[in-house]
Length: 98
Image (cartoon, rainbow, N blue to C red; front, side, top):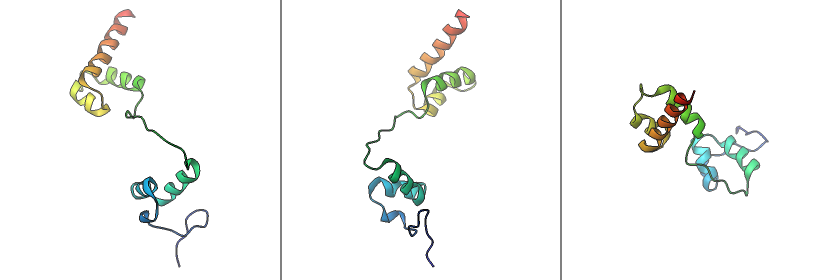
């Protein structure tokens, strides 16, 4: 007896899906690929290159610097060392203003 996915569709392998849906099925699962297809089919989606918003990064840097190096912070968030140093400088300026 074949297993069925939600919605009554027979279970399929990630190889059965087209393009990006196959990649999603392979990395996550087939049901998620089907759900995304139903939700977003035909739409063009562009994902930001940064996962975290800058406000979160600023607060994280403020809390973890100097215990965590600029280099480690830049690798963690995908920012340049220079940008992390800018966040640090902004935090220092804000502290001085208080």
